[in-house]
Image (cartoon, rainbow, N blue to C red; front, side, top):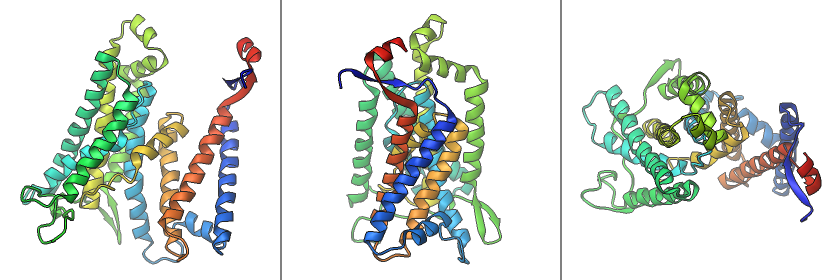
Length: 367
């Protein structure tokens, strides 16, 4: 193996990537089909239910669409936020922790908002969530700039710190703990007052929640921020080469601090919208978007339109697996998670294969 080396493909193209992705998906679905058949389940029926998300023949299909949106919005915003940091080659792996910090602070506002205007309440929840998550991101960036700490390890550790903070709040029965239901003997997170719950536009039986509108507008704004503004250009230059950015007279430290604050704040916004939509908080409020968002950003090559599309596809996969699992007693949510993992892992492997190839060291040196 010492004579071989990984090199980036010179003939890299979007067409090749799409073909490889399709191959990866087919392989993963084939593996899933084998597992399904071992459980005496027809894989074609399962996959058809998964892709249709239980919409066909369902008079309450609008509820399924509303549930899909609840998965999609936090994933999209978190993926966009992580993409900003990654574009600068700042490896923010702390999406889960930043999301949880935002959820906790948004909940503080919610639980103390009785009698407040609903719009003002949700707005304050989002602001509190953005500030708390943004300050965490800013602190990590400051340590990176000042002491050259490893941002990957720092943000990764913060995930577990915040996870145990919210677990502590959920497990501690005490007079000061307004997060919990007062009428329950065991610790259970309480529900928000009605004025803290996300509103929406009613279309028949369907409610188009404002969070989706915010997410779509935010996607457009971030696209123009990256493509059309000086700050977006600076992010790209720093990502290509910090030395070049310094040579060009850019304040790299300030760019890192600013971008990481924006990135973490956007994850906080996702948390504020998610908690308001859920009407409560819990240690599972993230739905793992901090981890899944990394995959979405990576698969999308940090392209904003691609992140939007990939977030939709991943959300359909997640909700479709859950919807299909409810029809079969032999499988549960764990199988849905396994299938999602197989598909995502296969796509990541094929993405790597489409981008790199194995070459002899002499060839790599000449190339």
